[in-house]
Image (cartoon, rainbow, N blue to C red; front, side):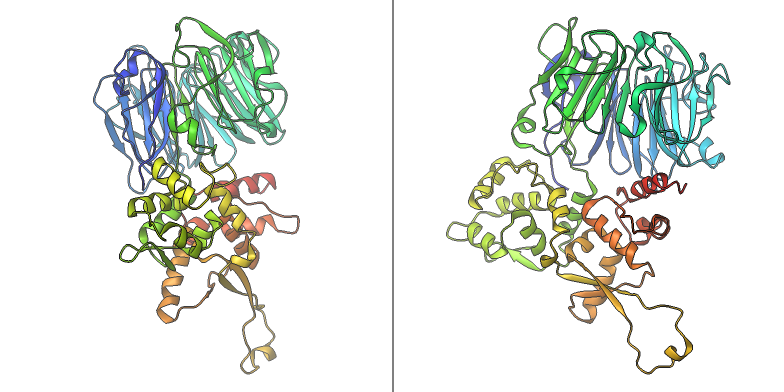
Length: 607
């Protein structure tokens, strides 16, 4: 939609080809030559000198040393959900539950983890579909890669694995040798974790509510209180419930764990675990005790942690983190300065993204939340705009409710302050609207001038992001300008009631902001097209035959991107009626509604 800020990287000589500073080593954050578009969803680094860039919804770009960039695109009906990396292997998961492989046969890696019978024929020339899951009628929910092994969470809670099984840790000691084809491990698993240089893995079970570690236990990095290197069967990680865990990342020497409360724990080899001392159980890292961690990126020799205040901490090999000798270590987390725009103008933790590989680290901005996509579509289509801003001959159609929500000013106040005696130009107006509809603040100079004219604080605070503004708008009943009419009559009326003359339907009203429905649902946009052809009304009748309860929850989801049920609401009814909502209501393919419903199913044991 709009151009965004740069991608920055640090690292060793292999990656100077994508940096604007053509140096062998990049000891500090350096602006990359990656194309500056708002389409980067994720950057994944491997344990080799190459990396993969996910360009949503189904496009990928591959960079390898000084070789020409490769581009890939999955079939048009496939939308990427996630990508993970190993040594010479990348796995791509799509929303349809299918898995795709991008791998390369080399002398140093026999691709034993790739779930393809002809894996030895793999090259980086093409992405290959992994058909075994379809043949077994398995829907893959999530994926993870360790050093030589892959893990798959299928059909909700069934864990499968493929790859090296010399220690018997894929199937809990039941099988030996390499397993190209995924083998069943166990059920009741809800999350899986690994690492690009990690010959072990972690997983969380729902019953019992525990975190398990399995595989090689170098330096006690499984957090089980032991240094016994061979762990053929899962071991309970001490001192944690599974429901407390946000994420875990493991590497050859160490493991890092972040809880949902944002606490950071480490175990394994001193100097790599962030503790400076050897630990065989996960121990709270003192330097981060008062910080709330929200993102983790770890590789063989380095770890990065991002806090909710956009503070970046790192430890391990200093190369790529600090301008010093790469052979020395930083034993404890040290605050790392952020470059340019990242340090000065961003307060939203959802926009800064970090990636960490063995040879390189990345820092970039992610504007790809579905809310900004949906509102961006609404802005670009100029459909159902209800007012204009600008000077005579340069008016731009906009949506009044959204602008007033973001600025806490009326349209008249904005018009007077921006286009009064000394009106701002069209380019400045467009930069302002980019922020209104998508939180884009890349055109800093123009946007800061506009904020000053409107007497707004710049940069916007963490409490004034697009997501928080829209979520708060849900509570503002007075500003809701539209109604959905839902028929709540009993379908099983008595015969005498059916014979009554001119019996009126009984409707309940769901108040909503019109622009929310327009942005988030193709079905409601079609309804508005029909209504506007007849007359310009402020209501629309719902013909979906969903219950009033489910519709209210769906509307709230449009504002908040989450589903939280009360004690009075029937979870089974909600899941049943909204299971087809993404397709039925024509929602954004990238939305997380299915994930939210899956959480409810697991919580209420409906799977």
